[in-house]
Length: 49
Image 1 (cartoon, one colour):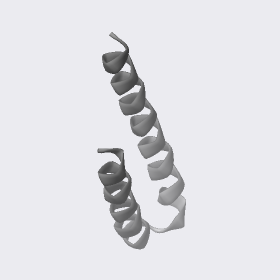
Image 2 (cartoon, rainbow, N blue to C red; image 1 turned 180 degrees about the vertical axis):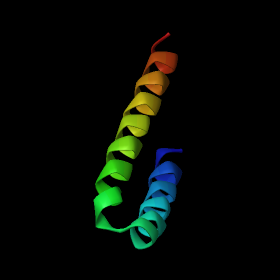
Image 3 (cartoon, one colour; image 1 turned 90 degrees about the horizontal axis):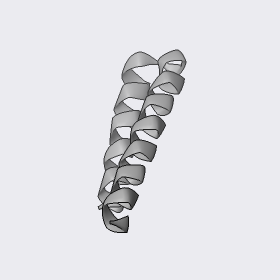
Image 4 (spheres, one colour; image 1 turned 30 degrees about the horizontal axis):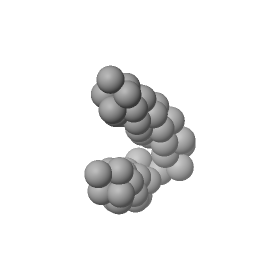
């Protein structure tokens, strides 16, 4: 699951980086990191119950 998500994110970052340029890349990385951490936290909570 997380391997697939990581590969997917790499593809998105690659294309967004080419399309938008360096300035927007940092914003995208921050957004993706935030989303990824939220997803991991929710998954952890779901498995913890």
